[in-house]
Length: 280
Ligand code: KIV
Ligand code: NA
Image (cartoon, rainbow, N blue to C red; front, side, top):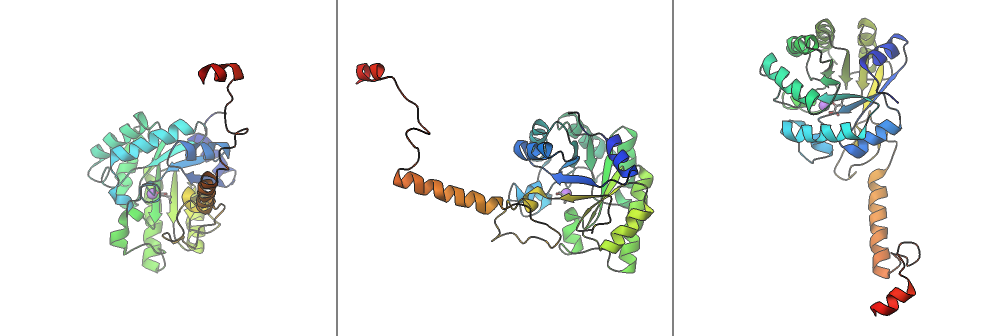
């Protein structure tokens, strides 16, 4: 199967068919998404927290990030690959953003990038688009801005904030963004934004009226330790990987302790009698 392209995503949007996007962080998770025929795979900087154990997305370096992007690209040959640009590697100037983007395209082998921000990043979006790098915007709750936002909470709940988000979306559209992620905004606001924009909206915690949806794979598969992660309201948990893994590992330990693993017939190799007799 060939890889989904920007054109395919635009065509889905034109036909009003919902777009599915999921995060992936390595070879195996990239593979899961390929096998499920997910149209867009995002190497999200949520990677920093859910896969690498950092306290915030802002702690990951470009080198660490690219290492994972390359692994996802090796694992997935069919989804449109989009990468986040991590904190600190695009804000300084359009020149910095171009340099960073070139590394993601050349080394990471992604087809598009995602930048957090609205009006503030519009010139960067325009520049990257002009050199042939498709860009996805990201407004509403922007985790790279969590210190300024005062945490992780629903955005766009006042008139001023809702208008600001609309203005951000319009600026991104004007600058040539091919889609925009709406994170943690009221469903009715997301619906209005989706109606007023010509580009697809990809919602996370933004209700059912977006052009597409995105979830963090580790959240939806239940990969994280439930005792140390609070799953946001907007996550639907489709799997229970964490408890499955812990149960399986505990069972393995029991089997080793009582000698029921490995089974001599099922999990072991045989040696011919004559070889064995000469050997002993
Ligand atoms: O980093 C991430 O996983 C994201 C998605 C939540 C959109 O940016
Ligand atoms: Na992100």
